[in-house]
Length: 369
Image (cartoon, rainbow, N blue to C red; front, side, top):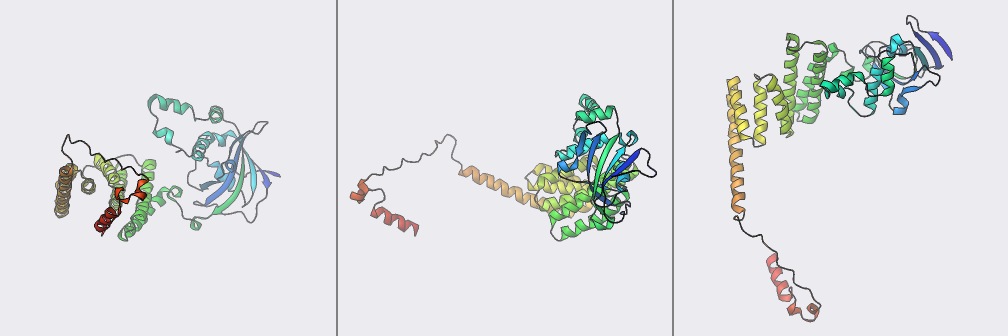
């Protein structure tokens, strides 16, 4: 064991418990770091707050990606692969730990880490701000304390050594990824690989929404530019859903768009097509009429869809008429099946008395042929 003070880092004391191997890795922006951690109080019992090994899943962070507990980047950057070290950190570094711990615990429990913020309001929301939902974290939030972090560095991957998911990208990288994902989605759509195309469109939409919520003010020009990009991708996503016969989901997404942006003709067009497929005749005609108001250039496409709608509705009406004719008149008593003939031992002694004697059997064979 060897105690050291990290150079340039006030309030941190490092103790190496198990040496690592190789040279010190390069921890540049975008580097993905995988590690186990254990957080302990500085009391006599060294009370454990969190332990990733008990959860069974190591922690992953990306250097420079604004992880809330940024001190961990500093600690990990001093370690070699396979190293296990204990870090004592003063309260100047641990103030946000309860919030980070809460999110990690909710993820481990299979819950959305921000669900409480989305689904609480009014008085309930006020109480939510006064409690993190865990007594030990509430106590630590009220009285911040120094903490011990025991870290075990498992793996370090440079940006070029792994496929970076959207959450691991910076805002600039997210915006650069959008046209690439858009193009990949279009290519998959043309190949008829609709399910795969939806994943590309969805990932691109997530990139845009992340940038929107973090840096742009709603309805400002930069925000509207991103919103237009997101709407285009959402409509492409809906085209895939139409091919996959997910009509009600198309109606849901396109309705969200037209409620916010009532001038998007393509949203009305796709919603009209979805309504057509689920026999919502009035809604389909209303949407197609709105398309012509917004974009007369789509007259030919709308005319084609209306012709299909007319044909489908006529088929449905004829089917309904046929069902009505086949139905028994009102008041007709239900048919009753005649009782089964009693089977007796006399069949073998008197074949003529059996319900399916030789003559009857011959008759049934004739009918079958």
